[in-house]
Length: 502
View (cartoon, rainbow, N blue to C red):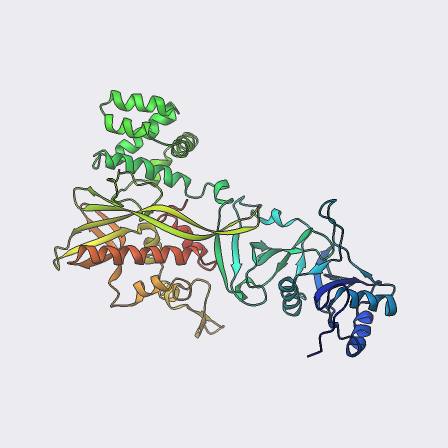
């Protein structure tokens, strides 16, 4: 280690300074600095990013251009680097940072150590493959074809650890797009990196994009009505009354008129519940009515069977007693337990560039009925469409989904890892449920509940309280695992029928 010498300005305050060179003289200045290091104890390192090339499309041709041209980075004290430039490279210029306000003098631009470390790791690992994008970073928040928000991911390890960015498709290739700070200004520019599957990433909940896409909006509206109907005792009439209520809103899109209509028909409790809807819930119902008006028969076609509400919903339907987080709702063939369920997610606000932890209250729905075959009780949750898609996979396809292997090679015999669609690799809790014979939670096809059947995740046990906790915890873990990975995008769409995500 070099001895630390004091200079008049900064003593031993070593920082990364940026020197602008004449065109194409980055290497010349770096060689000069390297040769000077033994005689300059207050200059510790000179760094010239030699791999900063970028593939930029130009009229159908790929050309090579520097990502950061004309810069050399020097770890030094201010006096030492200024003295070096004055004596040995007068054509160079130390970059100044912009004045923040009139009260502060402009000083030399310095790069924080953490940012410099990222920059060096990035150059050494990815700069040859990076594409500098012409559009600003914010333009990649949405898919222009579907107008749906692109997924936001956070890199968990490697040189890009901690970086958030958008998963964006470019000509059939999925790339990671993120913001990179300019060297000589406060601005940023967007870059993309290929082979996203080589990164260990986790999805972040997009708090802004979710407000701009319909997502499960119509399903939440129907679920809100179903919860209201059931809590008012209209269990067997749930579906016909659902259709009747939606039809009334189509004819007169007014909740005030709906309340009067319900009261005239003798549905006083339902009328009172309607009057207590908040603004967001009212908007959901009116949006559903508008969609039904433009697409007649939509609700009847998509909600032609009802047993129990999806596992996780944003509204409870029932009122909870003071101090209690759980309520019972009796049905003809089973008892439904509705529980307040707080779920914490990592979220990202693209416009502010801020990551945060958010906790949202959902309501889990668990059915309980006697197990006539083995004694005890069957506790079940509604995973009907999700599991239906899984059970319907033909041949050995569902087994490959679980094991994470697929046939490859011309002879069709070679087995190799198929990571993209494997539950084993990205939803380990679901993998255990589907494969472990000793798992207390089972995936049951077409469980008979009264006159209907339902694909469920279920536990059979004489201990209702213990089984209830086990089933709820398992289902919540599956939801969070599928929602947090980029690899199970298809199954995340099916998950929207289980977890009516806010």
